[in-house]
Image 1 (cartoon, rainbow, N blue to C red):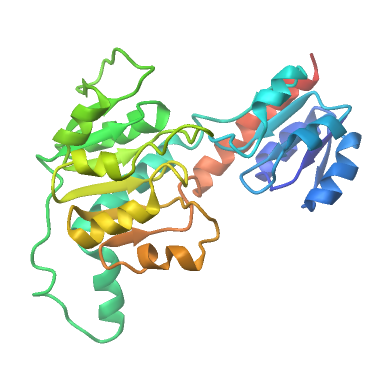
Image 2: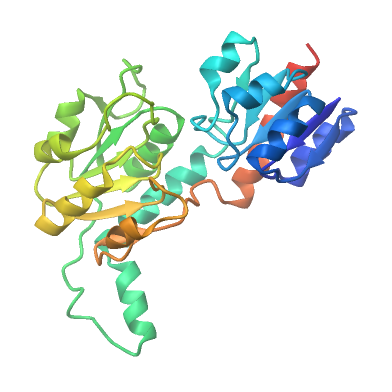
Length: 302
């Protein structure tokens, strides 16, 4: 059996596949090359770069499984794969801790000016007075939109910092954590910070856009470590410039790599920006590699 790994996998994952007798081919293919080559494999493992389209699925005549090393599967036509009886597998829990820690890090970066003060000091400046009006997280209300694995891990850490937590998730009705489950509008209205852990669903309205910003407190802080497109970036920039949003921490972008249209957000003095590194820790990558390898093995051996 052959498995194509097109966007990379940690050695611990590939070793697990090889130990089970699977031939692992790790190479990056262009869309045209993928269409020609996919017929040789029983499974494909991707990250966010490779697009597994309807055409790729049709060309993959031997495919028994499609694996995504990560949470979001919007780069895979999972609905069409289901009609062909091909499971789409992901690793929803493997990166939860790493993403949650980055969300908290962005909160600290925004309220304590870590991004801009560091750059100014490297230029020989001493902006102590300029950054005298920091904020504490303790005692503030954190709204969590999306209370799955990552949302819960973020809430755990925020509770440890003394924050109050309100959360909305249409699929979660109960929790054993010290978290108040609310409607989306209630979360928007009550929160000092809002962290997003929602999926991006094609054909549905942007979860956070101009109407949602209007329902938020003045001076709210937005954290997006979920998916690019979950927040309307133009509306967010307008809200930052108007002062409606005090600051934002952004790890995921509508276009990756970012385009000229996103420079205003990236360079905004009240934005903490990272290049989609939420799951980029050694620990998370090992867990992702192991989990996706195990799921692929289960699928192709059935």
